[in-house]
Picture (cartoon, rainbow over the protein chains, first blue to last red):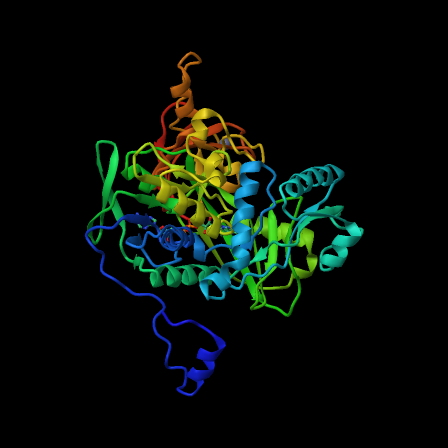
Length: 418
Length: 95
Ligand SMILES: Cc1cc2nc3c(=O)[nH]c(=O)nc-3n(C[C@H](O)[C@H](O)[C@H](O)COP(=O)(O)OP(=O)(O)OC[C@H]3O[C@@H](n4cnc5c(N)ncnc54)[C@H](O)[C@@H]3O)c2cc1C
Ligand SMILES: [Zn+2]
């Protein structure tokens, strides 16, 4: 692999930039690997990268049914944060955020991680109290959090509606300055290039269609490109977690729902950080290309359609107008949807399954992009050692049976409500 | 978009309804034991295809109805009262 640097760009200038090679190989699947990761999204690729880099497992493959990052990795609104209150989530997402802070350098690939801040708005005194509590919990866990009053919010995001006629007046907010956004495709590509350079086979257009399980232990997979053997297999297929797990005879505490995202025509710099509305579910940021990127609630019913419906678009438009009426005449350019693996307590599941050698990474709900490096890091540890790292110990599958929910919102076992 | 044929009100837009989740879940007997309750409360088949589910006609008759809907195409396959038989949807539209 050739390293990317300013010198390679300058040198390439002499030959019309024709020196760029492909960033990763396109190998044929081998009949057997030490480990297989199913799913070539950010999580599968990060798992392979850290398995090779930190655990010396290089005879491994990532199997992807479509193309890299064609799932939720390439469909999300790219928000990265670690503003969680409960211990299990706080430690996990903060570990991930720390990995984000060094990811571009580590990968020699610019993932455009931009710590522009994530601000959650409060519109009532009760909400301010709740944010003070969450902010304190975060700070006790060593995570940055700042409680802002109305004037501080006004300075941070003057485009919001601070007039007397605002439908939900802004009282204050909770800011995580180290939060921000990253370029989602670059994350998949950078991790793929990094894993490939360490010897990992990345195999696209290869759908897993079955498992070979003998005596309670996994021995391999069937795929659209033939059978492949491995005694360690990790599933990282997000919205299709229930389907792939069902091939191994597992039923999971997960429902698949659809979430939409939107982007407007490009504008001049308008809003600095990520801002979330507190009187409904709406959030907005501005991409480096100038488009306003926004989203909100799930459509609200089980779905694998990867496309959204109109009532939610209207609902989001209303929320956006309540928060910042100045966007009223901006045109929407595109909208799309992804299949969300909503878990029963709103938190992810990363760990072992009842089948020996088969590991589960799923239940990401609508917040798994920010988890990408952390998820790969702990999942690689879990697969390499056949045991979770302490950071993902409480995010195991058995917690649902044991009654150890990690329910950040206290919404109960209704996946669409998290 | 999709529309349901409410057995009480006729064809109505999805915005009048609120989702009630998987209707194939059977609430176990109180004495059924932990395993049966764990299955009912947490475990879901989560099919990619036909799914039987409850919807509440909140902005209509306020009755619960049962719908069979394809989770991949959003096609409505059948509608009926929450208990009792569902009628296949003839003119049902996908989204
Ligand atoms: C609209 C939207 C907005 C979002 N916004 C945010 C956000 O702002 N911040 C945030 O943190 N998160 C966000 N998310 C969530 C985030 O995108 C996901 O949680 C995360 O990307 C999941 O990564 P992944 O690698 O697990 O999944 P994916 O990228 O979906 O990868 C899974 C891969 O598995 C493959 N696969 C499936 N079945 C098989 C099979 N049988 N064989 C082989 N391969 C298979 C799929 O093709 C897919 O490429 C958002 C999601 C959506 C849809
Ligand atoms: Zn009705």
